[in-house]
Structure formats: C-alpha cells, structure tokens
Image (cartoon, rainbow, N blue to C red; front, side, top):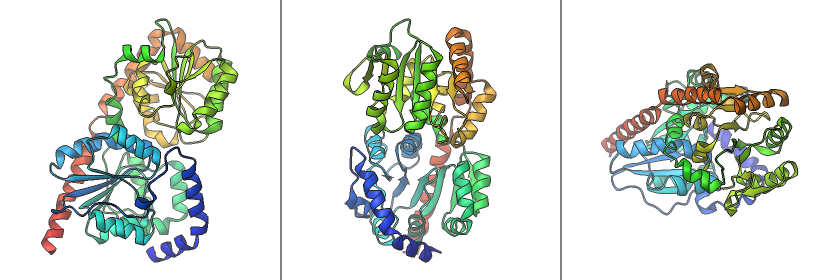
Length: 425
C-alpha cells in the first residue's frame, strides 16, 4: 500500500504542490522550505536520546504544552524535537513553548525522500503525533529506523471518521505501522479501532491540563490593558472560524441588543482586518489589540493571549460551531469559570460539550432568538453566571492529569525502543 500511496502522491503533485505554495503565501510568515524538504541542521543524538513530537498548527501546539512539560520531567537528559506544519504553529511554539523543546522544525512534506532524510537526521527513539495527523511515510520511516510510533491525545471527528471509513483499506495499511493509539475518549478509541488500529488506550485530553495553566492570569492588569471599565458587561468571543461563522455571531450579537464590551478573537489572525471592518459596520468604533486600542469592540489580533483574556469575561461565546466547522475549544473558558454559549456544530469537541452541558456549564443555541435569550438571561442574572461558571471550573478540575499519562507513555516507549536499538548494534 505504501508504494501505491507514493505513486499517487507523485502523480498528484501538480495539484497539491501549487495549492500548498499558494496557501503558504497567505500567511504573514513563510515556512522554512528547506526543512519542509527534510533537510535539518542537526545530527543524531550521540546516545540516541531524542524524541520527536509532531504538532500541526496552533491548536495542537497549545495542547502539547503540558505534555512537553511533563515529558521534560520523565526524560531528563533527553532531547525533544518539536515539529509543526504551519507558520502560525511555529510562532506559537516559539512564543509559548520556549524551554520545552531542544529543536523546533517544520514538518517534512510526506514524500519518501524528504521523510527518510529527516528521519535519518533526527533518528528519534520515539515519534509521537498529536491528535489526528497521520502521514504514511512519517510513520513508516519512524518504524523503519526502530522508533516507537504513537498517536497521542488522539481524536477523530465525525467528519474525519466518515471520510476515513470510505478509504478504510488505506488507513488499515497505515495503522499497521503505528504501535499504539492513545486516545482522548472511548468514542475516539472505537473509531480508530474500526479503521484498523490494534493497540489502543484512552488517556483523556491534554487540553484539560492546558486550560488549567492560564488560571493565574492577572485579571486587574488585563482589565486595564483591554480598557474594561468597572461596570462593563464583558463578552469574549473566542475563535470564530471563517467569514460565515463570524458573520453569524456578529449579526446575532447585534440583533440581541445587549450592551457589552466585546473582545473578539478570530481563529486565524489573517481574518482580523476583515473582521474589524465587518464589526465596525455593525458596532461603530472597533479597535485592534495589536495597536493598543481600548475600543468598545476590540479585535484580539495577537498570538497567545486568548487563554488569559478569558479571565475578564462575564460570558464567553465560542466560535466554529455556528457555521458547520466542527467547533472550537471551549475548555479554556470553562476552566476560568465562565459560562459558555456555542453553536450546534461542535462535533470536534463532542465529549467536552456533552460533559459541559450535562454539568450545566454551557448553552447551545441554533437561532438568533435562542442566542439573544441566552445572552440576555446571563447578563441579567449574575447568580446564574456564577453557578454555570462554577460547574465548568469543577468539571475541568476533575479531568486533570492526562498530560502526565501521555508523557509517561512516551517516555516508556522511547526507553524501550532505544534499548532494543542498542541491543541490535
């Protein structure tokens, strides 16, 4: 199957190569194409003590932070190489993961020559892939050099599962090269087993641990920096995705008639100028956080601040689920003890949504009328906000510890693989 995969990959290169290049041109920061070609300026560790963690973009990098922190404790004296696919992921790693890795690189394009060159340079004892990024050549060459191959914090969305099952033979062949899939939930475990994975285990979500890390935010400083007044009702809109999703939120917020200080963070920062323009048409004065503005409607166009900005919110609106985009992470505002409103299309965070709704910590809305009713109710009832917020915070606290379990699993697999490699020499 791997040979068929690579033949198809080469034949389709005239399609995917220009598409990849054009997408990169839309980013403020360009990727390192030398590294994407598998050329890394490093040599194998003299003792073989190196692990390779792959996180695709911003979300996966952020979710990896508590795992990387725990891995430092589990593997003293080992090197950690962290790879990313996007420039935004690279920037997030530089700004938020400093000290948690020894090498930060761009992930090679999944072509045999590129991947083989990279793997022989890095020569890790274990490769651990965050969440869903399964690449045939990466896993195959990891196995070929004797590294433990693992999926960590694994999840499979409804949409991904439906698509993957249509090409199940491909995934069955790919997963033969994966030693173990460590999944977030029982449903994720069932799905990857159905795709052909033999060895699995459920360890929970590292995002619970990551969400708890921003709880020491200095609320008074953030209120001052963002221009929040003492009597403001603050609505933080987190991670709307794309034009339609953000348009629905802006429209419904305007139609609700709620007077609020709004802080709106788009999922992709390149959307910030267009978001500011659209918001100004509905709400008048709109400012940008990057310029130090303190407008009544503020676009948060900066990296790495949203997790702490949630601390100033009275209510949080989570994007990605108003349009059918699968939803975005609602765990961070829950950890801060904030009531959450979200749309109906939250399938990528199904488990967290079901748990939060069962606890009474979040509200799902499908229409402008439901949105207005939920927001007006929460604004007028501080006791309700406190009750929902407390339920969310308690939910997150009860789920902590997954990152340590993932780190222990990676460390154990890496040590066993290294021992086996050395015994063959």
